[in-house]
Length: 254
Length: 294
Image (cartoon, each protein chain N blue to C red):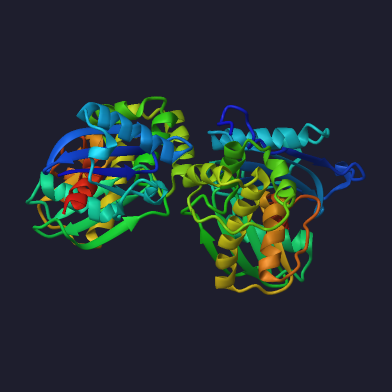
């Protein structure tokens, strides 16, 4: 059986194609103004890589914030169910899944079958999610990719009063004027994300093992700070941003 | 939609001088400096009357911003800083004003300033500042009875409005007017966070919303947010608004509509209330000092 999962996020659209539970192909495309079009492009890329046509796919399940915009999906699941299922496939021992995306972060408690037991979300505020790292990288004039490696060079915690991304931007400007280094500022930003994430996940209870997924899981600076706060190193898959689409494709098959 | 580059957020800096006043005849010349996170005001009172003021953008350095504001205010006259008898600093940067004799909290100063400019009937003040928003209740002398503050989130602050101006590529001073150039009031937007407003605004315009409708939606979202803060302290008449957002009718009129009250418009400038209050406190302290000295 061939199934596909389409994860329409705030920043990117992800597609995973599965054949009998194994990944055939995947694709990530930046979400443009028209997310339906971006999803078609992502699907096209994945189909090309898998060397199949759309008619070969028996079921397509959409997930993510823009899941309702995909007219050709046969089914829909919440991003929480998709994250739980995908993380369970990669790490069957995981009981807590932390998913940090561009505009939302979630803490999900899962059972051994990858079913959701409880969850908590941060959805109304950008402090602590991917777009926070992005605007902070602009504020210290570096790239999102460099934020992690930069922060790992610092061993100093500078206090930062991060409750709001907009205010944090002005605070970073003052920190630069106060001659704080980019390394230390980057670390302070990741520390803020780790603090916020940990307190959110605590609402559902932190149980080992912990899986970390979503685009922000590509940032080693966040992983390092989260490890400190959680008291244990989270399990991070290769391509952490694909886990939601993988989960959707798995749910399509079941 | 144009991003950042052009400075749509740039609001008009203010200058004022009352030429009818001869400062040489004044017994009391006091200065109030209000260093906010976004703007700084320097207000000079002579015998309790507003003589001159300047309102400028706060830089990255508080003492420097304070100096610049005082310089701008005094540049209009031959009054020199050494002629000033007493200086009070207020605002979040108040501890960093090297030439201040004393500091007073901005909540006390806003209440006192609003009482002076709006009259003794003022009981509720909404201060919409650059990085926070305060609902203040005061008595007939401008003394604070109670207050509530939101300083955790940019939604509902001047800084939040600056972000919207840049995002929508509309000069900040035009937002209020344009937000009423619509056929019908749009439903409020769902995001609280102005960072997410970016994604949301793009989506709304794709759905066929006009730019003015999007502005209207953000103005009413901002209004609604502060109304809930106000309702927690309670709104007693007379009501007034201080701070930079007080000049944005897109927000103020929607606040008044939702609360079903009128407001007293502060003259000459609602943004200087904190500075005026500080200068009034300076006058009190000067009198006390002189009495003590006999």
